[in-house]
Image 1 (cartoon, rainbow, N blue to C red):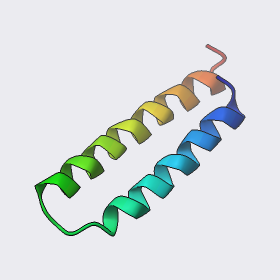
Image 2 (image 1 turned 30 degrees about the vertical axis):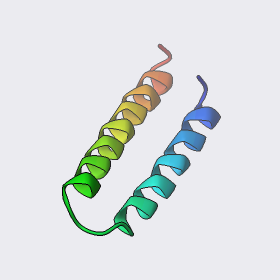
Image 3 (image 1 turned 90 degrees about the horizontal axis):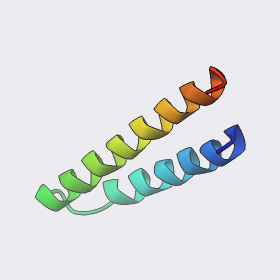
Length: 54
């Protein structure tokens, strides 16, 4: 996956997070935000690998 695709994924994750933050507070919202944070961490790892040429 190239840098452009990863950028698209990061934008999607940002939109998901913004939407999740609008949900009522509670355990399900917290779980969703944690899932999104893990997804963003995976994207960051992929971005680093792309920058290193792996």
